[in-house]
Image 1 (cartoon, protein in one colour):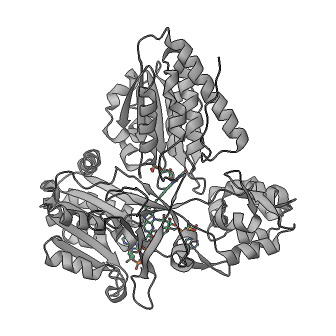
Image 2 (cartoon, protein in one colour; image 1 turned 30 degrees about the horizontal axis):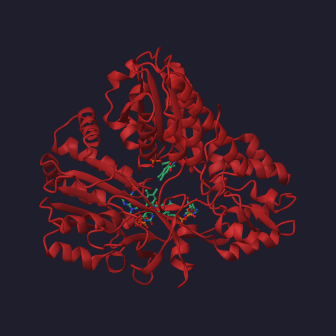
Image 3 (cartoon, protein in one colour; image 1 turned 120 degrees about the vertical axis):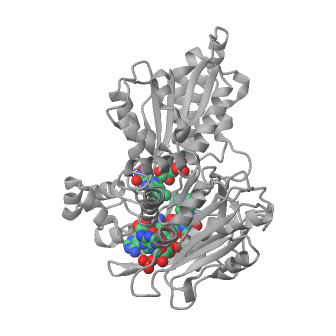
Length: 578
Ligand SMILES: Cc1cc2nc3c(=O)[nH]c(=O)nc-3n(C[C@H](O)[C@H](O)[C@H](O)COP(=O)(O)OP(=O)(O)OC[C@H]3O[C@@H](n4cnc5c(N)ncnc54)[C@H](O)[C@@H]3O)c2cc1C
Ligand SMILES: NC(=O)c1ccc[n+]([C@@H]2O[C@H](COP(=O)([O-])OP(=O)(O)OC[C@H]3O[C@@H](n4cnc5c(N)ncnc54)[C@H](OP(=O)(O)O)[C@@H]3O)[C@@H](O)[C@H]2O)c1
Ligand SMILES: Cc1cc2nc3c(=O)[nH]c(=O)nc-3n(C[C@H](O)[C@H](O)[C@H](O)COP(=O)(O)O)c2cc1C
């Protein structure tokens, strides 16, 4: 008989979704339980993940844990370490991957992706597959990497057993639906024990988490830059009472609040009287409260504008939607927020509920943790670049960074959670030398690494490349870094002050200058880390590394590229870039 699984109250579903999911998962468990009496041999399933900052990896691990509770034989595989010769022999292949850069695969997925897209890829008849694709629709190439895998596997003859699910940032519900869906297809021959409450476990995480953030206290919060420069805040947060644990290399998720002034401006310009509106968790709050704490007012994207255009009658928005040109979308969205749509392209909404129905949920932001728990027990430190700019005649700020710098008061309790990232870890052997390239806020995880290496008495050498505009105002953590040099923790520090002279000097210029030494460190087994700006710096640093391999390793272009791919595979070239 079909049963219903109790979905926890804090799971982010509407009552209807909760009921549907509960019944759906209950059905699967009862079917599985019935089938268990005649269960055959365990069903092999390979869960193959491509992840840059740990989300896809976390979901893949969760799925394997779930599968282990049934009559499955699951194998967890990182795309970076996957033996591609196995691909054509897979029986059931479940892919979970994110998208990075401009529609690119995560670093560790790049090689497999390139090979699979090439003529060298084998035919895959006999392989059952399904793809969960993680992404963010504020990027033009939404979920591109997962889409690539999905379409290519189909083109190579593999059998899609369940449709690809594209995840727009918030993975909980789509993951629950997708995993339940693929398990339902595989379940007739591989059952769960009904007592396992598998699906319920998947949705309900114990303790504080992304779904249930810890209301933290801010202990210290100050600008690290000198007067006249940009603003980078060092923020110390207490985790006392949370039982949250982190390791160096992890990130902290922070739930921001939108600026009240902008929210009031939006409400004043709306064509209806503001009443209560539903939030994504199903509660009813005032429109003002909802726009401050629950909905995204800071970014606009194609999906929002398509909905907005239907209600606005603006000929310009209509032409934008009809042209559907990637460059034009980018140009329009860049530097505009919801307030611009409300004021410049008025739209006809019947009431607050209708209005919030087109908005996305306000998302937490991730920050690379800048402290070691060994050096600061019970605390977590961040290094946050405050985003401010003027566009279309308006001074604007990044939602979370300005929340942290401008809108916290003594009573504020920012909701936080730990985002584990096992793809960005110190070498387990403390004797291994490390090279860290972290200009600007990219210094964050390396302050944590240095604290950790000192606290553990690691003997391996540490080399830091740091850069920022001016030595006088922008030498973040200068006292601490100089102290690390003095006590021998930091073996080398190369500083690139980009605007202290006529020509720009960047971290990669210093890498190239020290190329022979850097190559020697790599030959001695050093791990190479990069953190900070993804769009320019990380690409230029990558090119510099390739140049060093060619010049000092005397490698051809192809051999140097292969060397760098191998470094990534060996987890000796790790990036935390954003
Ligand atoms: C794994 C990870 C680790 C991270 N670690 C750190 C860290 O340690 N420190 C840190 O500071 N950040 C870090 N970030 C970035 C951080 O998560 C936020 O993206 C950042 O703080 C900006 O968020 P915000 O809410 O302030 O800005 P948002 O409200 O998200 O606004 C940013 C958006 O504003 C627009 N914008 C920005 N500048 C301009 C401009 N000049 N002109 C027009 N439009 C513009 C763009 O659309 C941009 O996408 C990390 C990100 C990731 C994924
Ligand atoms: N996703 C987001 O919304 C978001 C939010 C915050 C930050 N970021 C990114 O994260 C970066 C970190 O910000 P930040 O203020 O800490 O530092 P930053 O802007 O990266 O600047 C740090 C140093 O890097 C230099 N630099 C510029 N281009 C470079 C390149 N191609 N190669 C190497 N170095 C380069 C800068 O020089 P000059 O400035 O003199 O050229 C500066 O000296 C930002 O650049 C931004 O792209 C993204
Ligand atoms: C620098 C950066 C670039 C990104 N580029 C894209 C993109 O082009 N398309 C997309 O859909 N998502 C993009 N994303 C969103 C990620 O795919 C999404 O956050 C995903 O959940 C991350 O999963 P992971 O932690 O497993 O890597 C990007 C995220 C970052 C930080």
